[in-house]
Length: 446
Image 1 (tube, rainbow, N blue to C red):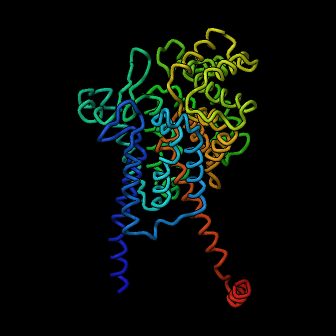
Image 2 (tube, helix red, strand yellow):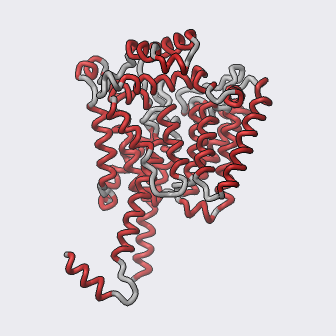
Image 3 (cartoon, rainbow, N blue to C red):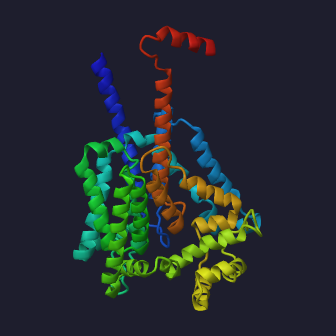
């Protein structure tokens, strides 16, 4: 009787594992789609897969679809962002409104599917995705024809510009997205089935080594900077002694300086970033690709005193941009007038923005609270600051719709629920020799 029940439970878990790993696979491949949507980097594959999986669970395993307070918070944030726009703007350009305001609410199915199915997701599938990224990079570098026939047609674009100093993009549309994915793989070792990585150290070493190799190959400037901050967060949050941390930090800074001098003659974008940071850490703020992202955040914060609840618009405001760039702080950050003019023109030329800066500009103080809430979602586990650093990098560099962001937040939400259930069971469990007392107290409390 018991063997039959166990076998039946195992059989029932096979479809759940398949569905969970389908969500995991598509969430870790945000730019890949069998039906590619043009003019957009992040595809809808993870969203479509999550919706289909949740619909199947609703009819076949509805007990799994529990609603927790944390789910309502995420959904509430998404709905608030969705309606936070002037009606005239929404009716005038519904497509831009959906792209700017609907990012979180559209990503909610991905978050919820990850949160519900987290325990059924397999680290082996995670490892398979890492190998797939590595294979795609190898094919793109050494067998471009094979890459074009296998991977290129599932991406909306391939932006490998070797002459311009940009590395291969692999299974992403550009190296910067690939750099974010590399940092995600390493950060996932802190929250995605941590016990597995503890007992499979070789698998953990492979993930770290493969991610670092891919990061160097792609020459992603944003990925390298994000990796530096993540490494610093990992060092400060480690259990090493203060002397050991200080020694490692000193060696790390010396390595950056030496690498910067060595790579100063290189034409790659990643090498130029390391070289510039080695000469002057504030150089990163003046680099145009980073500066335009910093400007998005700066304009949003600069606008809060005059418009505390935001502009209610989905487009970048030229007047707000010029006002921010004319301020004393902007002149101190970007002292060259030509650079400020370039940044202003770059911001005007973009139709709309989707990152944290756009949320700040549109929603003001409420947008700032949303950003802080997303950054501090990881809570209560070792390495939470590494994960927060990754989330900050995504908010700084990418769209809030990116499935990798909601994969992280969904996993962290699942860990919160698991810890709460474990602590609840521990609190209710009677101590040895105190059974009658616990029952009496429980009965009195009820």
